[in-house]
Length: 270
Image (cartoon, rainbow, N blue to C red; front, top):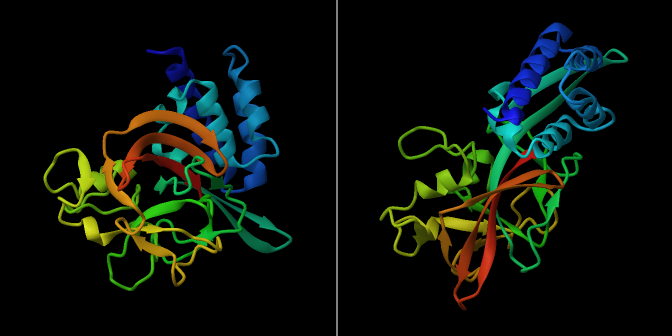
């Protein structure tokens, strides 16, 4: 077992114990968390994690830890790291802070790399299809999200209409990631999503030009009109930190003019 894996499992257990003892209080959680991690004597790992958490968001802290451990930590931590909610009460008002991992397929539309936006509350979207819009990491205005208007409403309403870990596949199971979700539409099973696949015309590109998390007129484009000929479904793991989360996998889309552009999948904090 890799050292990073052992550390990740130990840290994950510590995080869970801290959360259980905090009774949902963010302040109490932070104090207990710091105390618990200080008990870990593993080459300064505890100090590093505490430093990452202090004054920063949970998503960023988890991302930093995962990156510092060579990407091993994130993949080995249990689901409570990937999706967790804290509730705190301040001045008598109930405030909910959600930090939820949400994975999306994004397209580099302008050729300068995929630009992302931090989960600072400026973009609100119902990522997990529970009917509630929350602040989320997002793709920049110059790039796009791969989407499918499942209910035919003309808008992209929630995470089930994106390609990510909220997408329900044809067999009723939930996709593990965006490439898994898109691969479900690879009807001829050739590892490429293109016009030879039945649902090709149903998949669109959403360029949220005004960054409001709402599908406005002119923001949805067919793959053909966006100049996309095909998307390679054989993604490579990258685990790169970006604003709003981590780009975990990347592949390429071939344009109708023969050039290629990046297709990336990563998580955003909600």
